[in-house]
Image: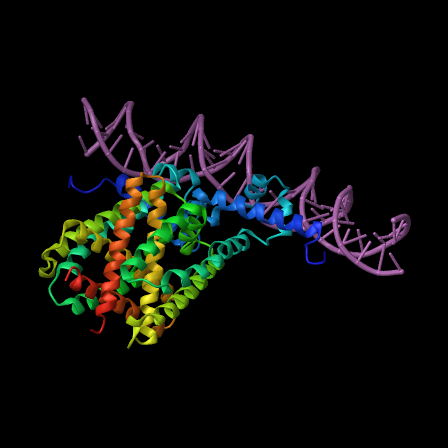
Length: 208
Length: 208
DNA sequence: TGTACATCAGTGAACGCGCGTTCACTGATGTAC
DNA sequence: TGTACATCAGTGAACGCGCGTTCACTGATGTAC
């Protein structure tokens, strides 16, 4: 089978993924700028020098984590924003989707929220790029809605940016509530829904 | 003069402030969780051990920085949100005020944006508390507006939270634009104003 | 298929360095009389 | 005002420790014939 990776390549990928997983775990209670290369390799059980076979530095590993955390999320945008249903249905679906995502990948969400304004420039830049792509995709999806008639491209991008920022705020609020009670999480969901509804109302009355 | 500090107390305060200033400077390109005690004392020009006369740890210093960065901002809220003028005037004033604040205290703003979701729990907690106080104050100011008639306390707090979050997003966007051109900053101001106007429109049509 | 050589992911010792924290100290400032 | 003692912000040496990076290496996997 010429399409399968060789044993060597497969093992290398496995170690690389183990490094990424270990780093993500260690980043639950510290920032990337204080994450040590030896910490990561120790957690995986390989020699410190093995790290260099996969990443130049922890900053480099951080950029890879951004790709892992956000890269796979793009298809989700399309499904959430552009699918059918009225505003309230769309909001309910979006909030539910965010809540589920935070429950499934809490460490990824924490990493992005933390490093978005964190101390490692290349990682900030990578996150900024991904979020700009999200905003662009949301803009395109919004343009498909009938209620976007008469909206300029610039105004749609402004609205898309507001949505993206707010989704991140919501994800971060859900994350804080993860260690709380069911009631805490429901309150976050409720407040987030109302905030999104308010933005949606603003949208429908914009220029009108 | 019994009300002036003794020479000893005055000198101690001065050293403490020098430590805070130096730390804030060093935090421009790293996170608090990687800030070293020796780095800070070296920047000030005192012995490493002098640090312990003022703070238990860098986390402790971080909490003091939160107080310095956000504590003095509370009076500003009242002025911004509750003062006279229609929505557009209020928005213009708020955006201008945020832009000026970021220009005057960029390091403080960066610190708050960075450590809000950073790796140091007590500092996150301190920021969370201050922002909750802001939201409460904004809520009280909003309640004074005539357009808040019929609004429940809960809805006002929801709106206040949206404003506080959005002000922070705006501050962070201005910060990124600080190293850019005048045009960059104007674009941020323009987008922020329109987003606030959209929220304001949502507010006026809420339940209506 | 078997053999001889190339590749390269992971090893382990070694390095110089800066870290946080301890401790007993110094000497200017504060206080009691 | 002057003196004798107490306080305490800042010192400087010392400690053990883990860090990032270098280097020559090993041995399983890959490849050419």
